[in-house]
Length: 92
Image: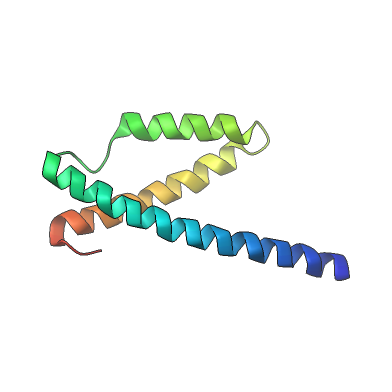
């Protein structure tokens, strides 16, 4: 049982890092949304999204590619929804 407790502590530490990075990413996403508003650009950029998903799949390797793509696709969905809110209301 001690092994699982140690593994869970490692996972908890990674989760803390993920939350910190997620919040940092959302802050940058807000700036992207504002740049899109200024430049009259659409929230959804399918070419950019595909480029990132392809890169993530490659970096994750065959064993984890599908999961990595799902993870990033979910992240993109959250980001696009927040960008739309920012562009529609000015708030996120």
